[in-house]
Image: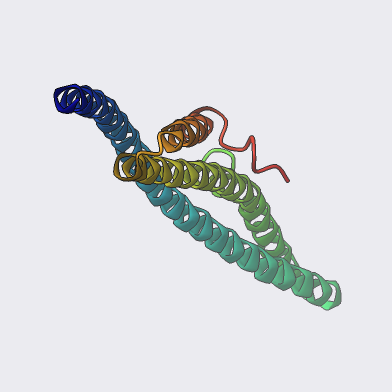
Length: 196
């Protein structure tokens, strides 16, 4: 009986060792995907910060142009009133020329397609940067969820090795598939779950 029990124990140990090797391979694969999702997440986060700064700078430039345009337009409007009351024709002509120059400058501050630095173009650039930032943030959030899923999968596999509860391996596999799904969402459709 003793020899038979030792043989069964040896077979069981060999079986468990083979299963543990498979679990270790699964842990290694999940760690690889964890590294990918972490790297992609950090990259997306850095891109979001950069685009947020770009959007903020562009909005600041937009505000400066708008303030300049408003000041120049107010000066032109004030001079129009003064020009109507001017008695000297030479002064009136000079004032009219200045009003025309200011109105052209105000119009250029509103829209300057050749340089893309009019307030209308700046607003479009700032909105585009905000949209890109939001996409980078959506990617980042998907990668963070994926990273958490891979970490949970690794912990569950480790617990399966220690406890011998191989059901945990199946749960870990399901969680890892969830991590892969979120990584794919981050890459291909970052806004799919961030509607609104």
